[in-house]
Amino acid sequence: MYGWDKKDGKYYINPEQAKVRRLMCEGIMARKGSTLIAKELNDAGYRNTVGKPWKLWIYLNLYMIVKM
Image 1: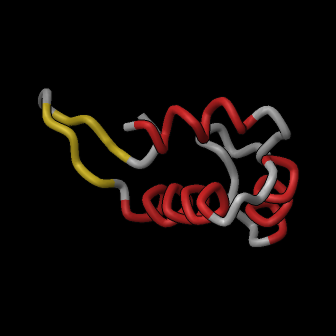
Image 2: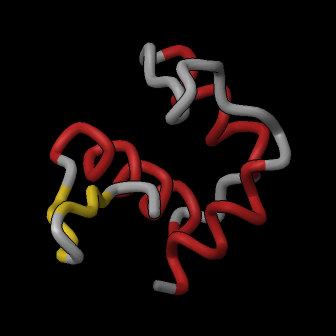
């Protein structure tokens, strides 16, 4: 789960990913589109868990992140 690390069956906050998750949530609450949110994350140098730039389809992922 993005923003969290799992170790020994317990979840721990991943500080770097938590920053990105917070930015995503703020973008959604500001009613920014997924294209703009992805662009802002990429421009700020943030990458997804496999080191690639954020894509336009992140909206579904963002929805799941905010829903949690």
